[in-house]
Length: 174
Image (tube, rainbow, N blue to C red; front, side):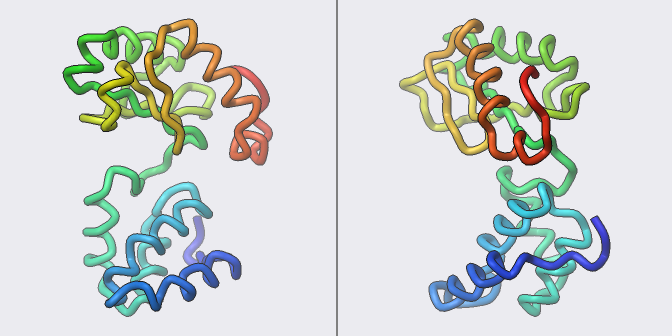
């Protein structure tokens, strides 16, 4: 990421469209950060400085917002972010086994990126889908009532069909 980060004209138009919906520029910070992350993949210091300049806020204020929300990343992540829910209902239905399986498959621990750079594996305190435990979230999509076999199929299908993976030429396999 270079110091000259700028949102694409399409995303900048979205920010301007949203401006009237938010009472203050500080409130507009969250959706703007999401749009920046969508474009850049993560919120580098250059991206945070851009948002601060654009909204007339301090970098510290923007960084405070970015580091508060778990859906915003201030460190590099892979094109596919996998969250394993580790709350009690998921734990009782096999979340630990799922996390261990993913760690073995990806060759990394929770909080790290797979050796091939396709997946970042994270633990979630709760994904708010207790009735479908165990639950995994891959990017924006939830997968419930998982078995290890179903999870492996989902990962293969996800990589093969993910627009993000396709843009990066990642092909099949995890």
